[in-house]
Image (cartoon, rainbow, N blue to C red):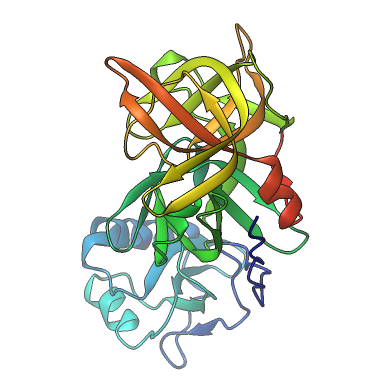
Length: 304
């Protein structure tokens, strides 16, 4: 079995979104804002709100600071055009405050949902995992072998940190985006609300399982064999889980979990690898056991 090492990522500590540096300074030299009332400032804020679409690209937001009686405009990058923009709108002098990074909407990384590489190829997220200093999305190795920068439904995730295929079929994408929230959830699509991963489990014959993937959604069945060798055109993969659960291209890397029945708590079992058939007529699908990448790379699943 190949045991590819997970790349070490320096500087894994992430800046918290919206933490402002203490670099506030009046936009206009000698501007006196002390006489401006909160009502005046609120009127000025509305003027900026109405012209939000015309703001300079470096502007990340604005608000009324009652303590200093200032209209604060937050900027990431150059503030050269900010004062003129505000003055032209009749907002008067503003207080410019620099922030360390642009604001981004927070979004959740959820197992089974689509992930795409910068070249345009699509796979599915398997599970979220972490070390003491970094976060990762675990998916199929034949997906991470494509390299590049990967994105999810809400934006950029990061670059491939490790990949093992063939021999195994698992890989890791480093979560570099501070706006991407790692979760213990797996998407159940039209079958119901998300399920929550509580840990990992080893497959056994007859085990009731369900799979989540971005092409065909949520499908269930059972494990029909374990420790199977599967040979693809790229080479053979060993110790695979064989199931009667269907899958199709694009489901690769998606989550295989224990069947939750009428509940919502599951255990992680595997990553969608390949197989035959489809979800219209049925088929055979093979899964990489999740326990191996967790052990090899000393990763801990996100659990709820």
